[in-house]
Amino acid sequence: MKYRKHIAVVLLAIGSLLLATGCRDSRTIPTEHGRPQITIMVGGLEKVIYLPAMLTEKLGFFKANDIDVKLLGEQSGATAETALLTGDVQAVVGFYDHTIDLQAKDQCLKTVVQFADVPGEVELVSKQDADTIKSPKDFKGRNLGVTSLGSSTDFLTQALAGQEGLGTSDYTRVKVGAGQTFIAGMNHNGIDAGMTTDPTVAKMVTSGDAKILVDMRNEQGTRAALGGLYPAASLYMRCETVTSHPDIVQKLADAFVQTLRWIKTHTPEEIAAKMPAQYAGGDPKLYVKSITDSITMFNGDGLMKPEGAQNVLRILGQYSRNVSPVKDHIDLNATYTNEFAAKAQGVRQP
Image 1 (tube, rainbow, N blue to C red):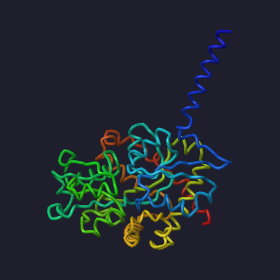
Image 2: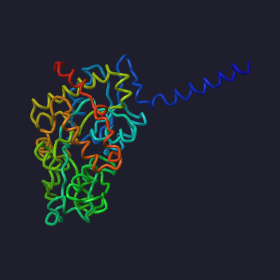
Image 3: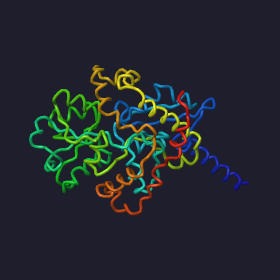
Image 4: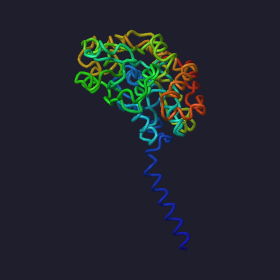
């Protein structure tokens, strides 16, 4: 009898633990009235590089594919990946390179829709330093703005400097976030140069507060800066989630690929009109310009180009402390799949 009671107590404890932690397991996707309930964290909802996330919601493509999606904003991709690993969200819209970086830490993340083949990032130099910082070789002794340490902007900053023979001891990486915090950092001498995206780029260049040093919003600029493509904005999930819920992953892929195709057939003005008014920051014309300058980055099909994935591994293998020691053991095939985006090509537009 005592043995039975002991077993009962143990089972009750395990059940209570599962109940308490189940809501934080990203492999478990809750449903309501038969519809999957997905929470996606986006590394900056207002950033043009991640525009497909909110645009998909505004176009109604999530609901058209019979899923309910909640979008959460987070300025740092590094923080977003942590939320995914802890089970707070089921997916992330962020940079593909996190899937490689995490594999080096024995964690498995997989990109299921690739939005862009280039970073969409720009290295800006402040107006007061524009005469002395002409290229990344002038980064020595400078304060360089990144979203956060360990973020994709951090990797890319190290890559730009590293190709000029500079190591991280030659300059200082400063966490300045994005948007207004980035602008404040540059305008108040917190950073001499820094990496950011539109609409921040459009605001600072138009105001005259900064100049473009390196432009990675298009293929030509990216190949010149990084020696090849650098696939960036994507939808990635834990590998366990992809394996356990392929039907739900397919619904997400269908929705995002429909949006990528929609982008290719509509003007920046039409795209801007679908986005939340506050994203324009009170200047609709400037917001349209920011979309115009970045919109060619989106690939239209959601597919990863193997060439690009290989170049990301090459760069991280040189400049990421996590990836460098294990670069020869990274399995790129485990970091992305084209299965869902390829199948989505046959889905008709609503």
